[in-house]
Amino acid sequence: SKVFQVVEPKDKESLLRLLRTRELHVTDAEVLAVARELDGLAVVDDEVARKTAKVYGIAYVGTSYVLVRAVSEGIITRDRARQVVNEMISAGWRCSIESYAKIMEVLEKA
Image 1 (cartoon, rainbow, N blue to C red):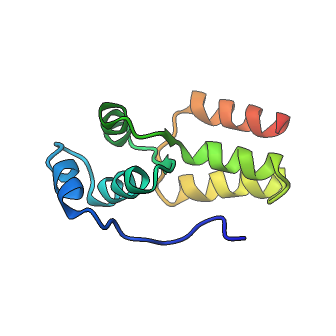
Image 2: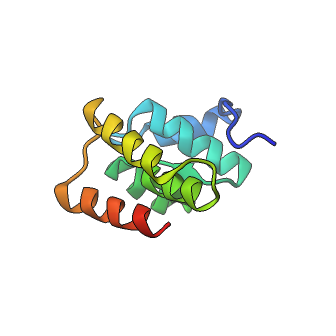
């Protein structure tokens, strides 16, 4: 079974409404639009995207949740999840020291 599938939003009006949100990136707007259309879960880390999801009633989680869930379901190992977090940070993903410590703690318990 497929865990992820790449799709584009079909409801262009909904996407355009989301795009009117100040400082919301196009990719985050697309993620939110698709999650809304499919009654799914948006994976967003950006604070503006999370606030927008709340306003529109769109369920969301962060990337770290996906990694913890993947570990707890045996899809990836704890070591691989830690490596992914570190690679994301190296690639520019912003994460406070406190958040990093919490992610590592939760991964250890997953």
